[in-house]
Amino acid sequence: MKPPIGYADAVRRKAERMARARRRPLLGWRYLSSVGVLSWLFIVPVVLGVFAGRLVARSWHAPAATLIGLGAGLAAGSYLAFRHVQAALRDDDDSTTSSQESSSSPAPPKEGKR
Image 1 (cartoon, rainbow, N blue to C red):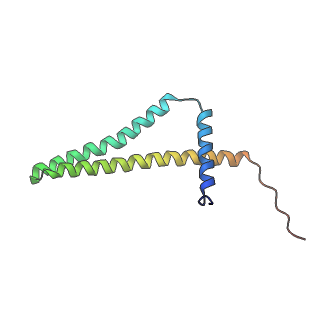
Image 2 (image 1 turned 60 degrees about the vertical axis):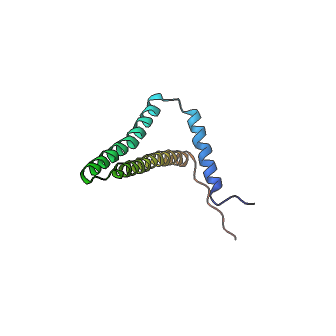
Image 3 (image 1 turned 90 degrees about the horizontal axis):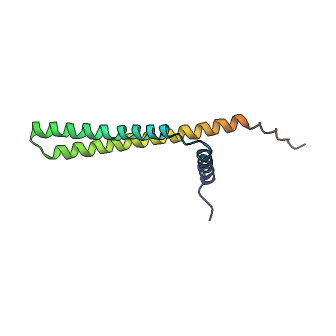
């Protein structure tokens, strides 16, 4: 059974990312700030959704609006956190690719048949 197309590239990128993480010194502030950003990206939409749901529930006498606001806030917060993590991983992959391209020499031209 053959692996799916692109599987080898995905495994190579992940192995490179892991090796780079092992070589990189642990920067506690960097990881702490990442957790802080993710927390804000998730908590703020949830709180705003609950607040908006409470306003709608009071004005329209619809108690389910609070739960709808909570669900909308959870969905928005999850989406924002997911996008943030994906962008960070993409930036990490881009920096790896650019450093490899700059350090590798170009391949010699292939000779044609004579």
